[in-house]
Length: 233
Image 1 (tube, rainbow, N blue to C red):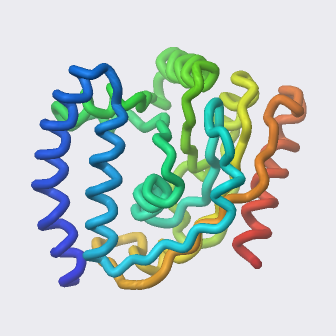
Image 2 (cartoon, one colour):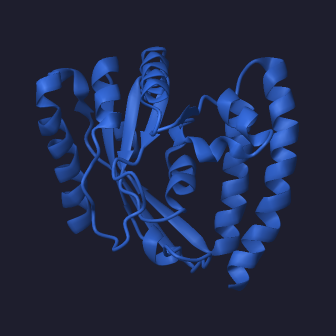
């Protein structure tokens, strides 16, 4: 509990200060790169305070991460911060609308390229998907957690199709990533942080372009099987 408090005491003021200062400068220079750099700095310090060590395998498989969809399993709130720090890629995400409810912070997210989606509004969701496709074609990199939510048991759940359809429409590279250890260090259901090691394994990319829309289930199964095998190994 002490580690969690240390992280919170650091992150709360840091996030506010970094967002305000970083957003202003980023808008001035016309690039969100500074925002991502400040995010990584904050994550690095927070992980140090939490006693979290990251071991990365296969990072070179990311290669040129333009028009790339990173697909990872999801068990903890640590997952996205760990991946941002470990992979060194300024990835974007399609995030549920609730994330954008925080005033000012929503402007920071939008400038960084994050896309808001309202899953209950089919028209808005379709527009969000189209924006993600356009961003990928323009060279962006996106992170998706295809299980849709954190696993309750730690076991790999079924994958939703949305992120894969976006990747197919954009002709993207799909890079599977297996995360191990985050669930034990920050379990679901509370704000507890335990010291330990997180293992990030980047797996061989898959070309979404090599699959037809009718074969999307085969693409999903291929990527899921790769992550499942890595988690079991």
